[in-house]
Length: 216
Image (cartoon, rainbow, N blue to C red):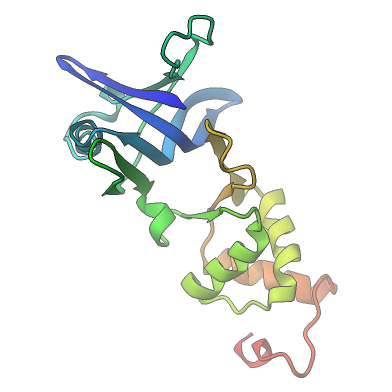
């Protein structure tokens, strides 16, 4: 577990977190910041709600940072005292659920995790089967015709062109060993061209029985 802390002027909130997913922002080869995409948190209800509230205040994004540090057990002295920060970016949704009389669990998720946005869509595969989730996402949220057997080709092309970018999974509890998360940064125009190119070059094959033929 890690502590997830928020500080701003006279406001201080700290909760526990077992998992966060982040996006690393680079510019000219330099790491600028790490942006929060998804988080699981747990603590007493007032603290969880206080963290939720920080995603709705009209502050400058430069004023908002969440600091992650090791949450020591009672009596533990020799532990890692390093920390790192993540920043919110864009819009988020959250949900909480009471676990018992004391603790509440909370989920914080970028809207890109929940549905396709104009500037991208985040695909999360809890079982690690990211190609399967990529096919499902394109089939549901995009107009591009796609056969399931074409997915490995499309996955490779998207990753090669930096249009399907891996996100960073911080599993602080060890409960999510297979979790994979990627951000899809394309529209139908790019997907259509990749499929058309694959068909022209023979990288993928369209048979007479394929229902995609007429759509293409």
